[in-house]
Image (cartoon, rainbow, N blue to C red; front, side, top):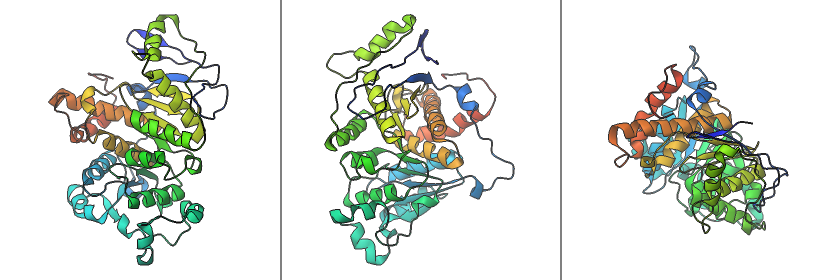
Length: 379
């Protein structure tokens, strides 16, 4: 069994009972805890073929931005393009068109005001009757111009807002995506609010919540009739790391859920939806439906800044469109995101770091990944 390496420690964790998170999941759960490293990412690199052209390097779709939030779409799409994808289309309100075309001239802009034909635009802005929910989720209401299933990967949520039109676009996306899909930010919040029932979501989704967003997802489970209790289980731990694991389980306060509790819940959720949960924060944890938890080893406190998550969504969506398997794409994406943030912090310091700095250093992080050079800084 692999171990999670903290400084001078190794942790071996295997749950041999069902974690009573309140989520319906198979028992027993075997939770394999590992970490990502430069070498592990390098072992999964897909080299760019000499004969490559933009049509063979993947086409990503980002559903991002809203009135006053065009910057989220700009950040996500720039990061997506910098991740090596051949083409990127941004679905955003028409009011953001000029901003996107000027800020990121490499992307295609599809205004979601124009997704429906003229006869259906009013329907896009108003709730569908409850009886039409299934048809709506399956994309059978009218003829839509944007084919969500035509893209190699989809990322939805950065700066999306929680407006009525955003709800409708989310419903149509969830009813039509057929490839790997990243669900972030307001898309998570909308699902947590019950806009699309969790039980009707497609399998294989990649959720990228921070702690509060993940709590909203769990809240949606409760509202759908599943009680949520405290996680319990029997854990086998290497004796050397007992104190470290105890600290993770205690969370520093008996009144606050520990980081390990959060990871257990995220793992149970990933298994339930047959997808992935990247729980963002200090030592972000990727919880996979096959039972593996992958901790990130890059990143710093300076990355706790507006737009950082939008950049991460863009990177992961780009890697998915490039053809990486979902687990690999998320693992490499979080590593590269943190590595670029570490490089940026070396230049500008953590206090002054902004999301655009992460994108600016992303090419250097990718070069480090693709080259054979050893790291000279934090891995």
